[in-house]
Length: 129
Image (cartoon, rainbow, N blue to C red; front, side, top):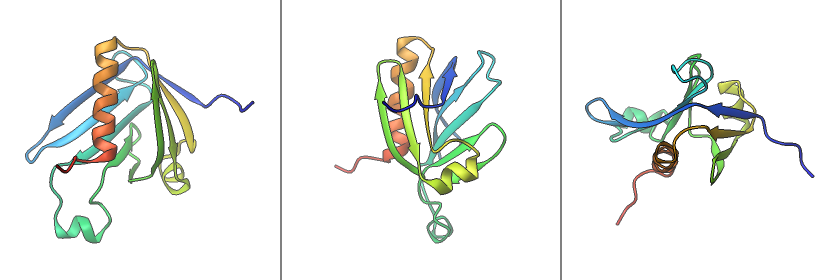
């Protein structure tokens, strides 16, 4: 049997579109006031040639300490109370987090569903019809 994943118990989870052009942000924080460990998953709605040249034409993950990495999620599996995330080694190193961890969402069911939907939209990108 494998050891349990390191866990972030998030008492705040949210999704918002901010800025113009909009950036989709799915975020969690450890403490109810937004303090403690924080993670943000962000995806811009438009990318320019410079973004593409620099490999920034994808989502990014940001920590509360200011570390940022573009891309990096290798696997994401959600369940009834949270999500397990596996990062590639470069992302884990740059963000100073384990390469696999769990976010347990200690929030209302509606906030949990909204966060998980937003997180999928950030990581997977827009669906093409």
